[in-house]
Length: 479
Ligand code: BG6
Image (cartoon, rainbow, N blue to C red; front, side, top):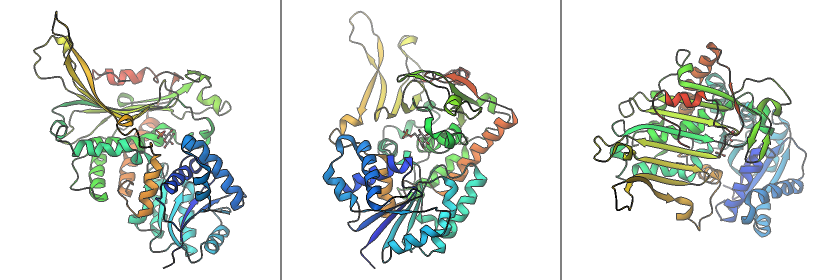
């Protein structure tokens, strides 16, 4: 077998590739994690030479890497870069790729394109004999628009690649804190005995962003927050919080447990959507960056009912979680950039302290704005006159604890693993389908009930009904 190796990136000049894929590859190269002889072939419609492509990548890498950029390491990285232009729906570029990668072992095809092209690209790769026995394919979420369209994509992918060589990317699984959740739960004796309905009152998962949809409007408008973030990132977080201990750390053992959680999610359909979900869309307002336009103004005044905010109450119908609500909330143009999981424990069964002093424990796993895990426990204040208690955070600030380590882009680990052939951090087909099945029910319920978006002012925490959603059950959102 030849020593020459390659990774091929489709959609190589798109937003995602420039912001994430290439900067991640740059860091992997800088730290010596890429196979020495591996070229990176970018494929896109735009006309470019190898040199002009490398210049475009350099600009993007500089912007993403900031202080960690160096001309010297980019020069090393640039030697790997090649470019091939063409329309990926036509046969022409594939013949060029075959020519450029003659006698080369192709390790990975990376799809940074719209999901509409996944199937057609896989088909052309197969027809042009570009798929070698070791070649893998990585595809980005969302895989399809619903269960039916995801199955169509999967059908064409599975004709070209076996399941164990398909890497479905959900970049949340590349985040250190998300992986740490598995360590926290299963490498510590402290939590597991309490990790169930007897000790946990409810769980909240928030993915709040201050940005709007801006230039991504044309993609976003046909997806909305439920499909863009809940179907994938948030359900993955929910699975990692709720799953049973896997038999071991094999990719399939973990994924088996995640699928069981997805299958235990109580369906939210037409009869439940009004009670269990809230849809919102931002109107103009103020955020930390000043005055911002509303969603429909960003599209040039178009009329759209796509949600930019969702809140919902999920229930997992199994023994561990019976009666424990999981509140999920995500939105654009919210007041802060916060991504966190809050595990709210129950109050002690009998308090010897004054009622108002009895604040139940809370575990906060924070991904944004910085990665930290904090356990709020009750402490006595150092007063003489009275016994007073106050929740104090046992705070494990991961950014501080690993201060010398650069905070990696989530994609670095995912690309590294895909190149090595590890599927642990990737989503299996049945996970994607189980998630779509649950999401499709909600979408159908919204349609059946004619549930259009409630407006919220940019810079606020969504429509007021989102507060009513938790308060009806006696809880409040934790900011
Ligand atoms: C992407 C969504 O998958 O995740 C975006 O398409 C969203 O709309 C992003 O902004 C959030 O990711 P992160 O890592 O910035 O929290």
